[in-house]
Image (cartoon, rainbow, N blue to C red):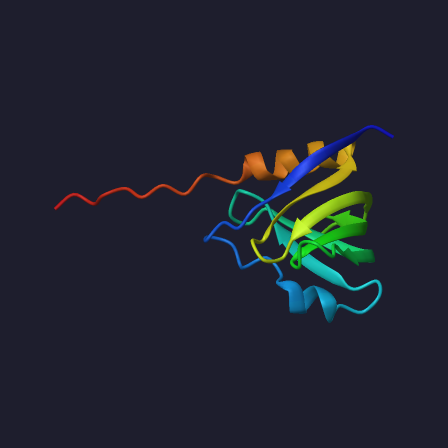
Amino acid sequence: MATQSIDIVNNPANPANPGTDQLLDLPAGGTVELYGEKPGATLLVRVTGLKREAEHGGQFLIEGFVRLPNETEEARVESSFYNAATGRGTLHVDARFAERYQALADAIADVTHATRPR
């Protein structure tokens, strides 16, 4: 399986990515929402493996499955890092899923502010 990376970032236009407590309180097989760069580009991650890195308190190794909102097809998430302290990370997923996610993100219009004539 060819894999590709999807960056997780904290964009103020999106809800906040989960913090340490939210991840630690997650039941086995629980789902979290992670957000990419564009507002509304949501990833639903069903976490099957969560390992906290000892030397970096907020950093986790995540494994599980990811899907897009309103879809049922999931892709495997392998050896992905997420820093709960910063809300940033990288998901390693199947390249076909990454392409579908990128198409979704590209379809979301960039928000621009236009001044109104007076």
